[in-house]
Length: 423
Image 1: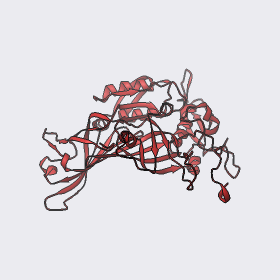
Image 2 (image 1 turned 30 degrees about the vertical axis):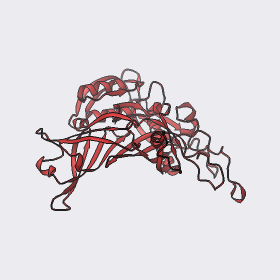
Image 3 (image 1 turned 90 degrees about the vertical axis):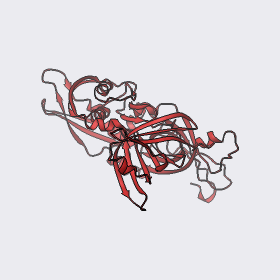
Image 4 (image 1 turned 120 degrees about the vertical axis):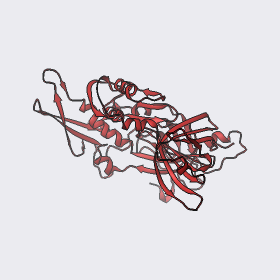
C-alpha cells in the first residue's frame, strides 16, 4: 500500500427528476478544492463520456454529484456537491464526448437565492450562528469561534454569506487582537467561522519534510514517511516589499470623519511597533526594522484612507471600532501573502485548511557540508488552500501554505559557507 492510494467506491450524478448514473469509470480527473478565503468547497470533474450521459440524463448544471471514497488514513467519506456549470464540451470521436462539470456545495446556490432583511443583535459569532440556522438549511456542522464586541444591525437585503464575510472583516476573537475571522468550509469539519490569529497559535498537526533521497518501499514505516514527504515545492510569493508597503502591511493611517459631530480622528497603525502585542505562529516579524539603505520602517504609512464614522444623536459615540479592524485587517491580510509556498504532497483527507504544519526544507549547500534546514523556508506554516487531485486511483494534493513570522530574527543566522564565497 502506498500513501497516495485512494479507493473510489462510486461517483454518481443525479438529475432533478431522480434519474442517476454512476460516472466513476468516465472520469479522467477529479479535483476538489478547499480554500480558507472561499466560503464553500468546489470541485471539477473531467469526463470522457462514451455512454451519452450528457444527453440521456439531460445534464444542465443542476445535478447532485455524490462521491464516496476511502484513503489509507481515513474511513469511508461521502462528499455531496451540486453541479453549476458544464464547460468545454467537445466530441473528439464519433462515439465519445469530453467535458468538465464544475460543482460546489449546495449551500452556495441556496445562499445566492436567499437575500434577506432582518434585525440581529449580539456578537458577530452569535449573529452568524443565528443567521446560519435561519436561512442555510444544511446537514453540515457550523463551527464558530467566539468573538468580541456586540452590535445591532438590520441586514439590508444581503445574502447570508455576504453578511458572514462582512462580519468576519470586523470581528476579533475574545482571545486575540487581530480582526482575522474568515468563513470557510472543509471536507472534514463542515462550515467554520474562525480567527486566523487563533489558528496560528495552534500546535502543528504534523511535520512535512522535503528530501532528496528515495523512501525504501520495504520500510515498515514507508507509508507514514510517504505521507509526510514533500514531493515538490515552489515559492509562490516571498518578500515583495513594494506590495507590502503599498497594500498596508507596514503601516496605515485612517481618517475617521464624523459628519454629525463635525470632527476627525486620525488612527495610525504600524506593523513592527504592534508585532509583539499580537499573536503569531513564531516570535519574529517577517521584515527587519530597516532596509539595506538605512530606511527605517517604523512610522511609515501608506496613502491615507478616509472612512465615515458616526455618533448616536443622543448617546455615546459609535465609530464601528475602526481603530480595531480597518488598519489591522489591511495589514494582517497582507501578512498572509508575505511568504507563500505551493507544495505537492501525497493525498491525505485528514489534513484540512486551517491546520498548522511544521515544514523542513534543507538548504542548497556545497558538497561535503552537513545539511541544515533553510531557516527562511522552514518553520511553522498555516494551510490556506488544498487541491485534491484524483487520477486513476491515485490521490495527490497541491497545498498552499503561508508563513507570517520567523523563528529567529532576520540577520541573526551566521553563514555556513567558507572560503572566498563567505559573506
